[in-house]
Amino acid sequence: MNTVYKTKKYENTGEIHLYKGTRFISTCTLENVSLCASVEDSPSAISCKDEQEMRVYCATLGRTVCANCVGELYKTLD
Ligand SMILES: [Zn+2]
View 1 (cartoon, helix red, strand yellow):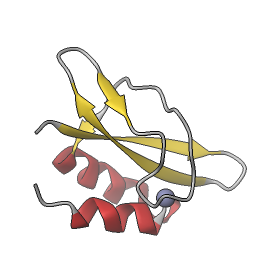
View 2 (view 1 turned 180 degrees about the horizontal axis):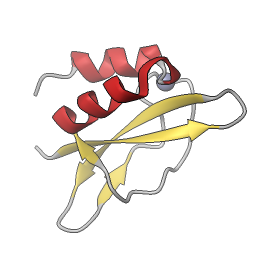
View 3 (view 1 turned 60 degrees about the horizontal axis):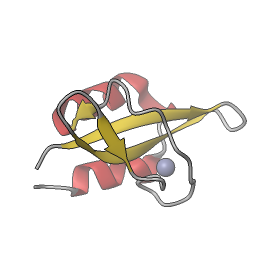
View 4 (view 1 turned 135 degrees about the vertical axis):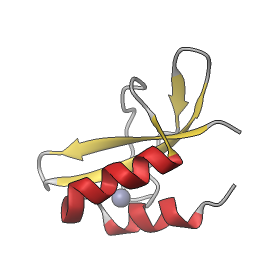
């Protein structure tokens, strides 16, 4: 299962939420609801990251990332 993740920053709150998706050959599709289920959107599906890449990336982003989204990211063990 090629699960991927994508960040989207919300300028109004300064928060970054994560979206989960599936990688295809040259692109990926993303769910319309964030991992924390608090925002709905259709983020652009370019440069999605796999789970490990996203964990590293979130660590560099620090507290600007939604804690609930990060929690979901660490909960998925597939
Ligand atoms: Zn979130």
